[in-house]
Image 1: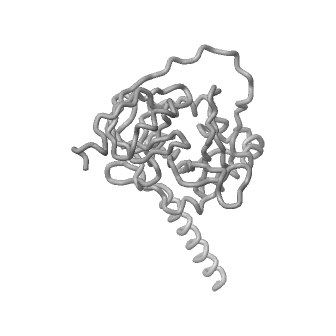
Image 2: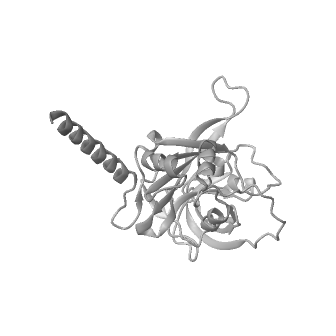
Image 3: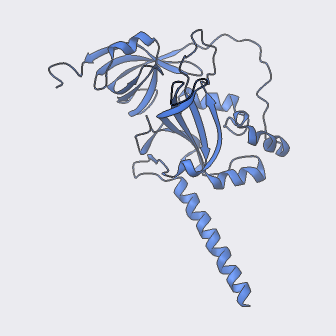
Length: 279
């Protein structure tokens, strides 16, 4: 009887511990922002992509970035059993810059500083799958990305499992295929006319500039019809645009949104950080 009680207590403690872990993976502020899990780098690492793009570029990035994907352990273990993601799944995308001239390295590229963090969350209480942006990674609270953003339709149309890109997570593909949850995304589709780009107006303040990655982090207000106010990284349409920009500059620009990427064009400095009015 003593052993039975001990085992029961142990089972209850394990269950309570797992529930606590699940709860800590997904937390919100009173104003509905997502709190960045502090321990996400201790989660299950799914994959890392280098310089990935979903469209053919005529000017490949000479300094491609890394995208690292982590998932909360309880969601991962549920996926192993079912081949799909349970409610309260949290996928963290951590984007890092890369470099080739580091320490003793002579070839290839290594990861360096964080340039952006985003979360892909399955939460039935929030309407299902949603995206949050944590800007350049310094933010501890993520802003909900509007459901009109192209990332939603892109994932719905091209994801291998649910609305997630399991096709890029090699250790998970066989599991989904065995469970019958995998959607083949490799079938060649007939060429179709490119969707027209959407353009929005952005006004904000530059927080950092990374010339190698052709990226700038901008803190901006609401972009009507596209996204709420937040701080996040953007690609510059032209590398030469970065030469005239510095942290602290206030800018006006066009956000150009294509089916699989977005970038800034027509960037103009409305108030320079170096001007007398901005000591």
